[in-house]
Length: 282
Image 1 (tube, helix red, strand yellow):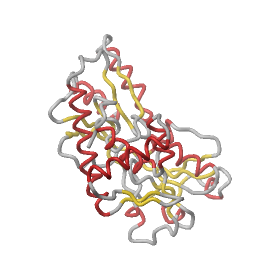
Image 2 (cartoon, helix red, strand yellow):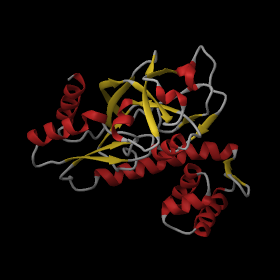
Image 3 (cartoon, rainbow, N blue to C red):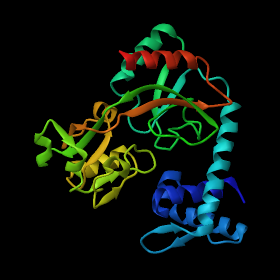
Image 4 (cartoon, rainbow, N blue to C red):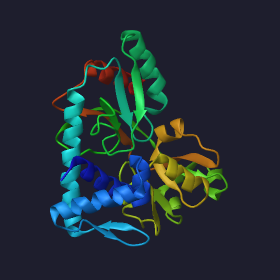
């Protein structure tokens, strides 16, 4: 068993197809297929069920996937902590950094730490770049559920509805979740903040469109193929032709947290938490 085999296996599961996984890894589809087959041969079990249209996990594959992610996360963490001290502090985010507070925090940070740039990096993963070493700190809007990471609450954001501009709901200034249930709703289970619990105790949407990241989510909505719910930060940092953002009423706000490796907090973390909280308080 080799790390490259585990990486290929996880990439296929995340991408959904061998073709998309190959594009993500920068190799050929045949190479990914051979690598995953070699992993299955080494382990003596079938991990994926393959059809002409999709790839699904076997029961054993589901259990192996959890361990594979854990192994790759630990390897990336080891590589990260052995790197030279970076000259910048990198903050990962999956959808929208700190929204309208992003520039304020960057400017306040630059005034206090002119020699250490605060850089926001997009990472469409559950940990917003922490697990793979893309980021030193991450902005998270959903529970991580991983004891290896520590978090600090910095603020809260209102929820907004995202609707195609030619949808009748776009004529309103505010909408209710019940207004959206008659349309297909785009939900990203991996990095998004929307769950069917938002419609409880009322009827849930009849159709859910699974998406993988903010760009795919916005493309569906702009085409009128779905509506969506997200944080106000998404509206601030992701304007899109054909998409109207409207205030969503009677729903709980989204808590915003900073997260980091519990055993390896970055330098000046306390300053970043303080400046971020001040921006949200303001």
